[in-house]
Image (cartoon, rainbow, N blue to C red; front, top):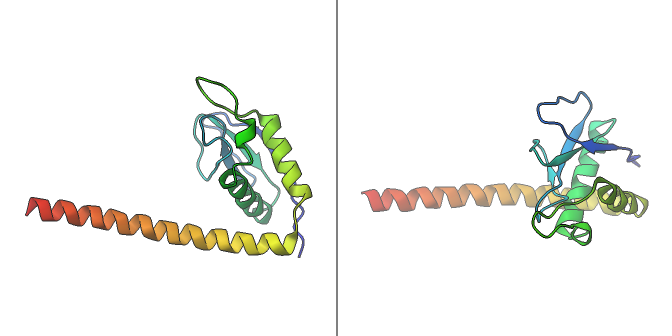
Length: 137
């Protein structure tokens, strides 16, 4: 099954609500290009027509950010940032090179890694709590 990846990207305005499926992309700092589920003051919003498109584009953005594809376009010496047109350029190039079967496998693997990562974070929180409990007893 082939997903047609169409999107609209624009600058997010604080307190703005979106009806269509969407996610946010960090646009300031060294993590520029990182997809976010929740908005922050320095982000773009990527809006799609369907939840399926949103999920595919979210994980595409995540893989591009992890693979440092956005890094080349981050500019600014004091406050690093990325331009909206550069995000579009990287995304459009990735979409053109999109191979459905391989990409679906990567999405599954990224989702599994996210679950493992959340599990490890919970374990670290528990270990930290145990250390405090030991030191306070």
